[in-house]
Image (cartoon, rainbow, N blue to C red):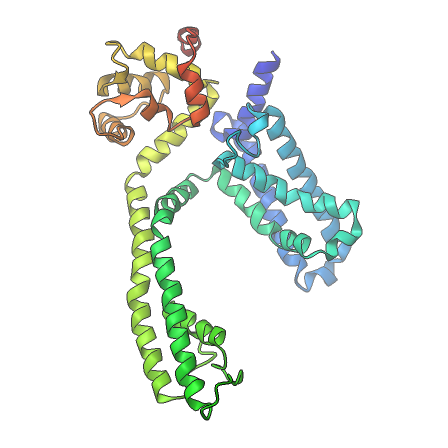
Amino acid sequence: RNKTFMHQLWLLLEEPSSSIAARLIMILITLAIFMSVAVTVLESTHYKQQWGKGFFDDSEKVFNIIFTVEIVLRFFVSKRRSDFFLTQRRQITQENFYNIVDLLSVVPFYISLVSKDVGEFAAFKFVSTLRPTLRLLKVSRNFDGFALLVRSLEIAIPQLPVPLFLFFLLTLGLGSLMWFVEDQLNNNGSDTPSYDGDFGTIPQCMWFTVVTISTVGYGDVSPKTEFGKVLASVAIVVGLLYMAMPLAVVGSAFTYVWDKRTEIFVIQKAKRRLATMAIDGKMLKHAFDHVDKDKSGTLDKEEFQAVVNDLLGLSLSPGNISDLFEFFDDDESGTITFEEFGQQFFDPTELAAAFKTNESALGKSIR
């Protein structure tokens, strides 16, 4: 009974689509998040004087109590409490990330209650300043579209160091040249930098170069010499050409993810379905072996359809089944191994444990 109660409570907090009550809780928490963000933002305006400091302090207490109850309950019903903030392999999963965000959004409040002087520390002020952003991130926990953005960045990040290095190279090179033509050539032959004017140091010139290459163009500073204007023109053209590179990397990654959005959403739905049925890696391995009728250790498309539609209850069309099958088939062998299938749902530790079990109790639990 206790296990059933814990699972039902887990569904209420983690799976909004499991019931009307779960969706209502999600809506109420979302409203509390938006209200807390609005109150925090308004506290920095003239409304703090009009409404009084007490109103904002009392509101902050109420919101922190709500969010504290939320994170305590999430920890209480978590299936792996030891991995709540960090996995055993010292990795941060998406679930860990949101748990950390939940914690950081309430910790400053309790620290300030313990010690009034802590508000003078820069680190505390920094975290407190980020409080509205951290709370708003909580909304993305149940926002499927946010997963597309995260997946796009995961694909693009390994390719970004090259354009970032080129950006630093251009900034340093053009900044140094700008310092030379704007300051050194007009310094009456002195070897000592003037440190005066808009281009008196290399860092000042690098700031101008960053603004120019990124095509922002604040206009706060501009070269005065003819050589400086020519060099600025070169930086503008180089910036136009350069910006196409990182934008193309991120854009192509998002295009790829968008084309695969159906598969990504299906996997998310399947994860929630597995959680709803309380199926872990060991049970999924047994289901995999049960559907594998020819005992080849792999699934063909027909067997894969049985897993997706019968076990997970997703009721996908044949076309979506084919797309999803190709998405899972990493090595393009025409069949899917359990590693290829399970890695989409569980971490490597749980998958490794699944191979070491000979449990055979899944058939009844699936039915």
